[in-house]
Amino acid sequence: MSEKGSVALKSGVLHTAIDESVCGVTLKPGATYVLSGRIVNLKARINLCGMAMEWKSTTRRQRKGLRMLYEQGCNCTISKNKISKDGCQYKNSCDDLYGICSRQRNGSCHWIRNPVLAKCRLETRNATLAHIRKNQIF
Image (cartoon, rainbow, N blue to C red; front, top):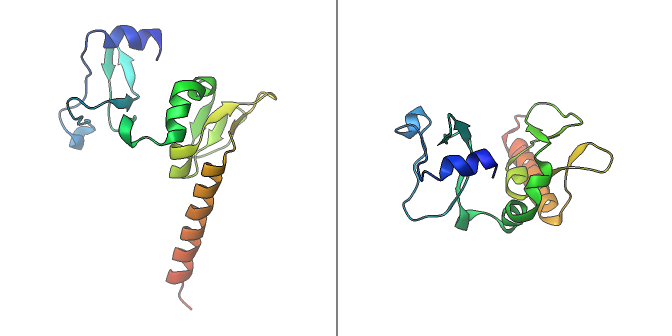
């Protein structure tokens, strides 16, 4: 967490829109969450565009990343559209669940390879191909 975020959250207040139809986030009282959002005028704000995931539903890889690795990737961007030296391309939910985008020794950003991410990507690819084959018209 940034120093600015720490100061904003000391108030114990987290701001969001009133309901999901206007991008508000509903949180369960007493649950622990992983959150991402913005600090505006020293007020912590979250919405549906950020992350609001219950800690107990995070994957083992996400927990490791949150505790140790994600900070290394803070100078890398993640984009759905194009690949650049300063970022990783988000391909599917496997990247979200098991990937860590980190700056490498050569200065470029890449997804850190790991077996769980590779397996998820392969399964997703195979499921997509099976769906395409099933729906092809001959």
